[in-house]
Image (tube, rainbow, N blue to C red; front, side, top):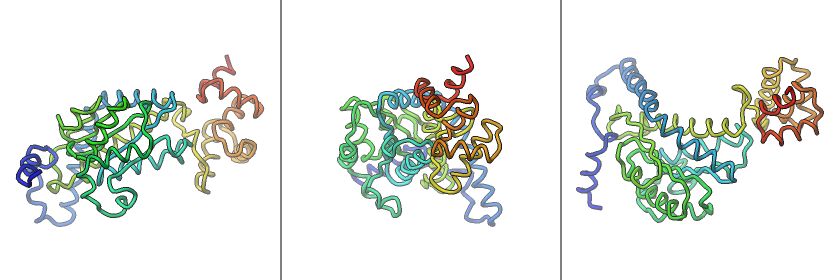
Length: 307
């Protein structure tokens, strides 16, 4: 693509426009500058709120994929790719899911997480190859993340995913983007021009982070990873998380710290199992069977015991 054509494309993107509210930011003292940034940031949740129906549709597809053994795969370049990798990497410790259940792929590979490898985004073949490398199947959901909605790496990935029959989602910050036209479902929050023209790690990145949080958190809740608003499948993999596990059991049951530690020791720090035993008085094996019969939903297992 020629430079002239690329400039012409960029001029059509909302995310690349000049923000009339911040034309003077280079003249502002620090406090006023930060207030301008904060004012612009406050518009992001409003833009996300407008696309909640599309986010909900994506969550329903992700839940369906998980229930049949499929995966959620994020793929993007630059900031978009890094945000996808970040969200994916936080799922195992938060929800005790396998590391390959939610996968984040970034153009340029792992090195691109720490330093800019921007040229990697220009090759659609690399996007296809990245999905081939993780053995994409039709049971997976692929979320292509690109603020501009025109990143070749993401386009290549989405086209390949569609060819296999996997459900595809386009997450961009420009309406009617190229990837929105490819994917089965488009999530397109419009946050407007950035504080610094074209610096889409700002408002656009914030919108993406909010939406990725919603996709995984809602999906995990829908498959039984919470009880009330407690993370009952947390993996107690360090001292802080061991303490959090005890606190969760205490919050869910009203028991003492000593009792929470006792039952967690019995279950090998399995928070969900510990809560079920404490609330119902079940033994460990009976509780395991009850959870299995409830498909891992703690509230369902508790209700079944009291019915």
